[in-house]
Length: 379
View 1 (cartoon, helix red, strand yellow):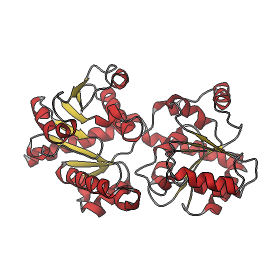
View 2: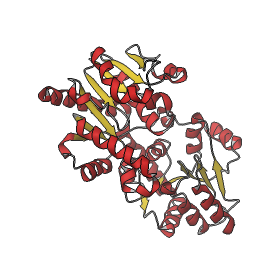
View 3: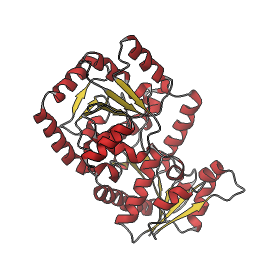
View 4: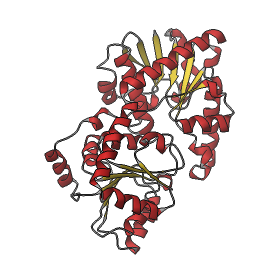
């Protein structure tokens, strides 16, 4: 069977949607090698091609014609290419489908990652909200089936787009296999030396922005003893200045370390060197950094209010995203009990098995089969 993927993000984005796209493609190519997978992207990338395409004889790339506007091709001309290539099923990996795909005989499924732009509109420009709403809603309407990356996202699709729940399947994401490899103590010490990290530290990973709520960790840190250190890894936005102001006013400068532009291969080591992973985000589509932490054998403390319990499981700890005192107490509780740490690590690692590649591949393939059956009835 020929399966087409909308692969723009796979070749362009190196985090988030790009990671998801590359993971789905490689997982399906590995576990269902009998299929042929065509990746449709406006622009190729030789670096990505070496790891995503070259290892798999059943994966190939299709790019936009040179003379055509890339965005126009992706939205309005792509269906013609799918028909010419005899694609049986098309998967829009990043919230979109070609505008006219429903008029074809091609089965289509779209992954919706989150509807944060509707839940928290003040985080987005007005024009961006209008574009996202139009594209996401159209994709949900035109797709034969929808993949939501969490139960939270499924509920949001139903609420905001009035979509039939029976049309939506929840298929969780996994994390990169590099987080499942446990490194030696020597390698961890080397990474601490490279980035001048303390022997013991709390860790938070993610873009430094209002929604991610890293300021809450600093407020909790203020309530802890001065020997507690925090490492924040992520791209800075204007929100970082609020954190810096708080750190300066409260004399926390020696306790908080910011890291930006960390090579991906160093991240697992930074995770494994931490005592606790903290993720107080107000809202997420899923929460991949939590899964990365579970696989890295690190206790997790996260926020309530969205889907983070789905990512962290029943044995991680959760606090309200505005309750810095509760966070401080949770940190102390974990640090003061080796038994609790061991239990959280053991059960967290077991829970992370829900997100292994083989399980995800089986779930995706099940959705694909249902999508094809639905398309047959539609046609």
